[in-house]
Structures are given as structure tokens and as C-alpha cells.
Image 1 (tube, rainbow, N blue to C red):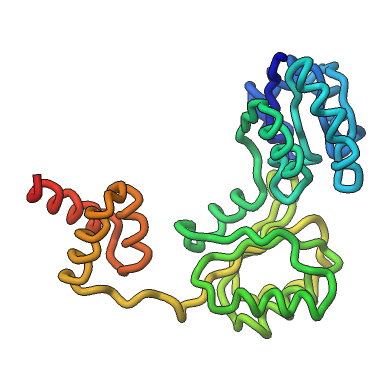
Image 2: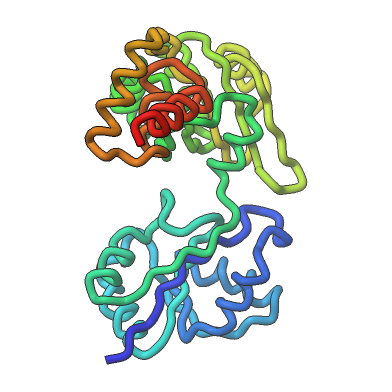
Length: 280
């Protein structure tokens, strides 16, 4: 039985110029496009003169549509797209990817626009370790409980939020996390793109006075309470030896010990190389 490829095709989050040449080629070559909203996707396809058939695949029909998409994969290749950005990231796609892999099909990602990553790299906050948490819970009690679970984490935090819940979300973030630094990204890549870099309290006051409009990505600094105390060199050398004795790969060992020891990655890697040279 022929095995098709499921392409996960990232589409623009605003500016149509952000779609890749490869994405346009794949969308024109596949036998079917599974789209979160066929009406929205049709606008994109029409703009680029692409006439591939499409079928809806969204949150409330994603399970009932699995068989149809899998049958299409048996006959040819299929592209999965969301309304905007990377499919499967806070959009339907996980179940389809799992089912396609289980059926023996190839799953191939086509990278492209992604609002959380775009906001992160422009935020001015640390990008070496971060958590993308999607939309904050709608209910106040659940939202507060969720934020409390993140309070002590040292990672940069990324959330999505809608305009009508933004002020309440900022108020809860300030109350629970304290007045940390953050970035508020609005309408990324669009005409009215705006990225505010300020404290949580300043953001709350700003949107108390200026009604939120558009879709928001929030990037919040991680907790400083969990910053590791720098290990002594003998402690680090001992940990390196233990990792090498377990045949841990140098790159993985350097990454792990960098996060645990407080040493710079290049320093850790140089010590690993030195110890490996001495023990050859």
C-alpha cells in the first residue's frame, strides 16, 4: 500500500509575504489540504492562485475527520494548515500527526511563521530556555491556580491572550508573579504591529487606559529565585567525569551541566574536551 506524506505547513500570521516558496509549492502539489477554516485558507490559496481541494479539520471535528484524512494519505500527500502560523502548535493537529505516524505515513514539517517564537526573540528577555503555555485559562480561579504553578520556574514564559481577557490576565500575573519584566506583542507582522517592553504593572496600567485590540502574545520573565549557585570547578569536573563514564554525548552533557552548574556552556564544553583528551 502506498504511503503518503503529511506536510505540516506553516502559513502567515499576518503578512502574506511570510509564506515560504517551499510551502507554496507543497500546497500546490498535495492532493488535499486539511484546513482549520477552509474559508480562511481559501483566501490564502486564491491570493497565490492555488487550486488544491481542501477539507475542514478543526477542534470540534478533528476526531471524526481522521479517517477521511488517513484515506487521502493512502492515495497521496496531504497538507495540514491552521488559520495562521504553525499547525499543531496551539491548534488542531496532534491527533492527526499521531494517527498518521501510527499508520506508517511520513510526517514532514515546513517551518515558517510562529507568533510565540517571533514574540520571544523580539522581547529582549532570555531565549535560552522558555515555556510556551498557550492560552491562559478562561475562568479566574483556574487562571490563578495555573499561574501559581509557574511562579517559581526560572524559564521565560510565553502566553497567548485575547483582548477581552487581557487586563484580567495581566492583573493576575502581577498579583501572583510580582512586577516582572515582560513584552506584550500585538498584531505581529501586521500593519499595526506593536511590541511593548515594560513591567507587568506598567502593562496593566497601559491597557487600563487603552482598550486592547487584536491578538496578544505575552512574554514574561522567569523567576530569579531558581538561578543556580555556581558550582566549584572540582564539583563540575566530577560531574563531567560521571557523565562521560555513562557515555553521555558531549553536547548533551554540556547542555545539562550548563543549566545545572551556573557555568557558561563554552566553559563546560572546553572542560569536557580537556578531560576527554587526557583520558584517551
